[in-house]
Each structure stands twice: as C-alpha cells, then as structure tokens.
Length: 146
Image (cartoon, rainbow, N blue to C red; front, side):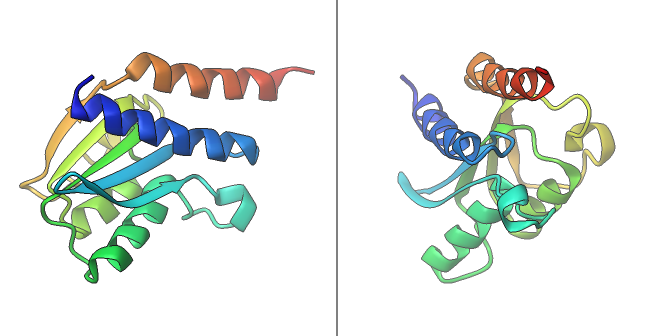
C-alpha cells in the first residue's frame, strides 16, 4: 500500500464518522512530514453550518497543531474533490499537495474555479476512487429509499 493509499484510507475512516452522524460522508486528513496534523469530516448538518466541510475542519485542526495559518509542506487528502469554497481555503492555506479520491462532477472546483488552488499546489486525483465513490453512492441511495 502506498502512502497515498494509507492516508486516503484514513480519510475514508473520517468519512465513515460523518456517515454515522447522517452527514454526507466526506473525510479529510492533512499530513506534514509523515505525521497527521489535521483531520476532519463533514459536519454541516450537525453544526447547522454550510461551511463545516471536512476540508475546513481539517485545515483548522492542522493550523492549530502547527501553530500557523499556512500549511506549506502539507498534503491534504480528501475523499471527494473539493468544492470551490474548500479549494479556495486550500489555496489560501498554501497547501503544497492535494490528493482526492472521487471526482465531483456537480460541485467540484475543477468545473467552476480550476485556478482556486495555490499555483504551487500539486494535485493527484483518483486515489482509492472506487471506495470513495461507493461510500457516497450508498449514502445517497439510502437517502432516496422510501
């Protein structure tokens, strides 16, 4: 298992925490020098806050852990392609690398604001994509059942 797969597996564990709270199952892990410095999962329903996405939760946690608002040298792992808001936050935090699992055809940043990330941020997509997508599909299928 590669490091990217290892950390994406951890992000999936965070997504399952969201699922257990009946939240859209998106999870995020932030890593600096081989150490997890931030983690988060979607809490928009729990907190009644549209900005409480997994990435925002993890960025806040990482900034507190590292003692600064910039996350240069960090890799952010998230199970779903970030939305425009989260891509903007990832850009402002100057995250060095973004790794995501499933592409978000409807709300993903690449369709709306492909330049939202910091210019030096490297992007890797499709890590454990099937597992990430399946968790989301099952959540929405269960929501649609009568």
